[in-house]
Every structure is written in C-alpha cells, then in structure tokens.
Length: 73
Image 1 (cartoon, helix red, strand yellow):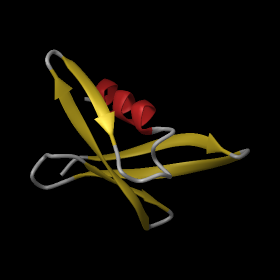
Image 2 (cartoon, rainbow, N blue to C red):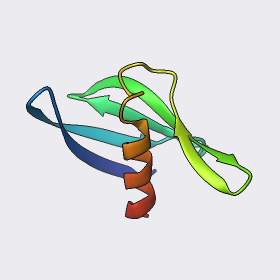
Image 3 (cartoon, rainbow, N blue to C red):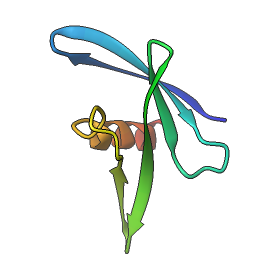
C-alpha cells in the first residue's frame, strides 16, 4: 500500500491530506483529519492519463493531487 501526504491551502488554512492507494491499485482514498473525504482514480484515454472523482469536495483539486502522485512515483 502506497501512502502520500499532500499539503495545500484551503480557504486560507493549511491542510494535509492523507492519500492511501486502494489494495487492487485502481485508485486512491483521500482522508482529511482521519475522515474519508473521497476516492480519486486514474483514467487512461488513448495515451493520456487523467484523474477523476465523484466526490464534490475533491473535484477542484483532483487533477493537482493526481499530478502530484505521478511526480512522487
């Protein structure tokens, strides 16, 4: 299981998101202050990789988190 700490600023407050890979490798679970806030998944379209989520709280930052994970690997 891969684990990441993503740091950003939201509404003037710094926050740390804990990101854990899903056991089957299909995506990542995202936690804020030990609370599950959503799931992000990589999607391969032809030759490009994009990131998606169904959770509204993560939609504005899903691309940033996904790109950050890519750089971290």
